Image (cartoon, rainbow, N blue to C red; front, side, top):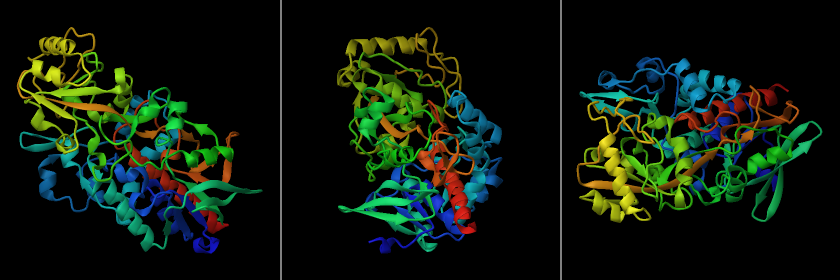
Length: 498
């Protein structure tokens, strides 16, 4: 049975963005590489398939972006204010949003290698485009980008995985689907291979190095409850159903050091009637990310968070947890006709939980599960508190806040006074978990004594220590690519030089 797998130098566990980058990098050094994917072909690619494709990268202006997006035209550059996103800004965001707990070595690798890694991906065949639709507002006829995000993969997550898999096949890397890895093979000198399940059979595959890039434990309800806490087993999963923590558990069994915030995860406002796991037809459109421009209401009819505390990129990954903590784990996002035309595209899909009314009183009766009288009073108090003398500007933190509320709204406070009114029902959607294993600066997995486990590497959501409490939007794919390439380079060099 093993003959179908050959005798690869490197085995990559997983087939998402981190795994593909690892495989492509190892292959560059002359190593023979295979990828083992637990999902069938139609669901392959891990969480990467489900993303919108934004990638946070250091750039000092349009010339840097043109290295990633070579077909960015002079007209597009002239019609846009891309700004810049410096190394210092990336450091500031990683520090601020993780409450300065991010591992400094990992953060340095992520930030300083971001641009060169995306340029390398482009040379491998991945296509990028400017994020005009999601990360820019048109102000006085010119697109102004915000939040440090200017670049996304062409075709979103689907396009990314498709092009990475094409590159892998072109480079002679075989991808085996429906081939879950269930254990690592250990020898006297470290990891010597993996055990896979093919149907009802267990098969050993030997190799010189294993790169684990099989995701976190977000799809495992038992592990979510154990590590994230009560009610997290009831949360919806935004992405793949195959990220059940298998790779992490295998690594821990082999002596890997647990690392990072095991009680933390990336989670967002997600349609309350979305399916339990991600849907590739709908993709990322169950998310509802225009909340900074409206108000969010819980079952008590009360606001419970500062919707305008910061630009969406810096709050959306932690507000899912806040929604989960509300009574019955849901909220309604409320907007009026001044804002509704400016809502993001995901609010216009057919599969949406939406109610509409011509008065606040009528809307209150339609908000399922909400105390209508309390909601009406909340809207009244909110409208009276809005600093209407400050201009509304959705492209920047405009300082148009509220006065006198126990929970303020710091920016983009908009009076709800123009019908029709719209409300969208959301719950918590889990993206990925923050806890993982410890790696060193070469992508090697470290044991509990802080020494590298020979032959074992990790990348992507497997890596702990980068994110705590929150994360800057678009950092997940960039992290997967940077640490995937790092692990692939290290493993490829190790197996070809020995």
